[in-house]
Amino acid sequence: MSFSQLTYQVSDRVAEVTLARPEKRNALNDVLIEGLTVALTQASKTPSVKVVVLTGSEKSFCAGADLEYLQKLSSFGLAENQEDSRKLMKLFQLIYEMRKPVVAKVNGPAIAGGCGLATVCDFVFASREHAVFGCSEVRIGFVPALVLVFLARRIGEGRARELVLSGTTIGPEKARDIGLVTEVVDHDRLSKYTTDFAQELVATNSGSSMGLAKEMFTTIGNMNFAQALDYTANMNAMARMTEDCKKGIAAFLRKESIRW
Image 1 (cartoon, rainbow, N blue to C red):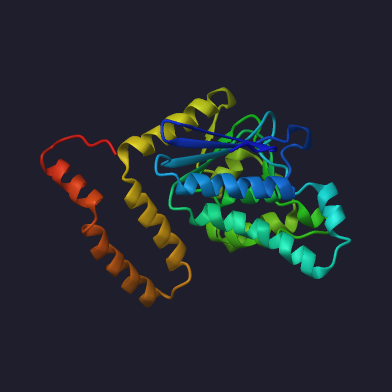
Image 2 (tube, rainbow, N blue to C red):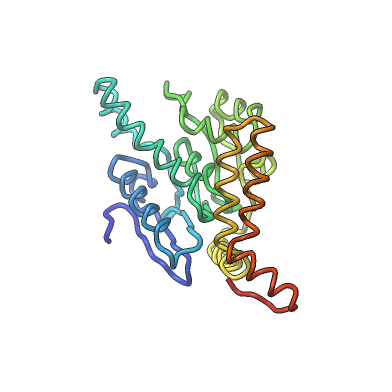
């Protein structure tokens, strides 16, 4: 399948999805949001894909919403704006709930909705020289409504309030300190570092187990403490009976290496 505003390629069980609107700093519009949704759904449903990498072309990760597109939408009615907003909601939800690890390779600014894209990924590797993060919507009279939900889960409400209400941008080291970024990497090493990490997940981790773990993270967020314990006890019991668990334990007891 071909895409007009992104590229999609699979190599060694890793799907790399690259936002490709460099003239707009990879800003999100309806075409790109739909393309990302289709590409990531495809990766999610492809058995040969085990890990997904999300990145941006050239000098940006994602500058957030395309302001010309947003200006056009502002003249529409509530129903039309709600429909458009739900498309972005479904994209964020798809990444967050996908039963495969999603790695953000933040090669440049990740602002507003772009910060949201990074936030919903499982791992975030940021360019030391070029990555910056921020929720700047309040500075143009807008709000990071969807981003806020995931940001508060990732870094806590206090830190999320600071970013959202100040509208300031922060560098990669600060983003790592508050839990938004997994690791800061020299820019010239970023691609190799991300590829090597993705391949390590492919080689050493059970896809079934990673999928179950992601499902549990998503599910327990909507439960109280007692419900979460009961649910995870059941998941513990079920996981023991999976083929991957049987295979992994048998290999460990025989002191054999296992490649998943």
